[in-house]
Length: 122
Figure 1 (cartoon, one colour):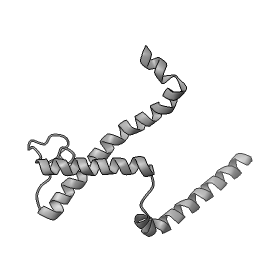
Figure 2 (figure 1 turned 180 degrees about the vertical axis):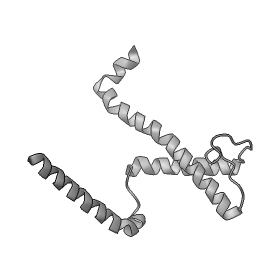
Figure 3 (figure 1 turned 90 degrees about the horizontal axis):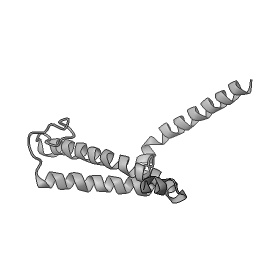
Figure 4 (figure 1 turned 180 degrees about the horizontal axis):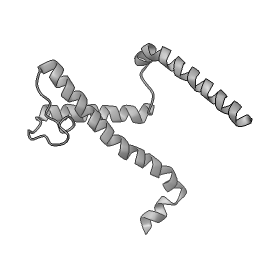
């Protein structure tokens, strides 16, 4: 059909993975935001969370408009952050305390790649 023809063009091949990425990113941001708002509610107000994210989707109580607004705003901010900076990038202030782990990870990766190169060379 027309959708198959459009998806197999060079433009379609370029756009399809990006659309797929956005589709998979959306629920992740929404779930993360719901969990963050629920736990912030517990920490700051001492109330039980009422969103479907922490109740396994079976919440019997409706969330109020302020909670829903906070969830959607946080999800939108997370989505924008991930789309602008890309996945795996942390803000500079979070990178500083994690610098020793990043250095360790890079060292281990280097050792693993050199071991792999020596074993495949023989």
